[in-house]
Image (cartoon, rainbow, N blue to C red):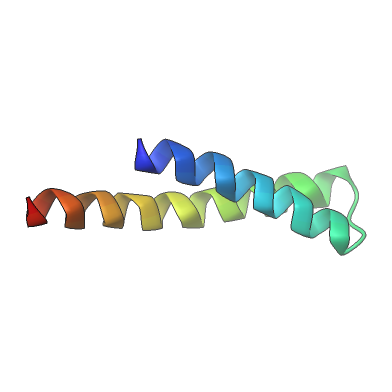
Length: 54
């Protein structure tokens, strides 16, 4: 669940950030994808660390 939430939040943040920078739709999609991938990786790491701690 952490990974799914991270993907959604990352995509939303990337879309918003590209919009603030004046990007067109392609820029927004690219920013959303990159932010989603990065936050998904962080989410996987958090999931593994939580699982190992329990």
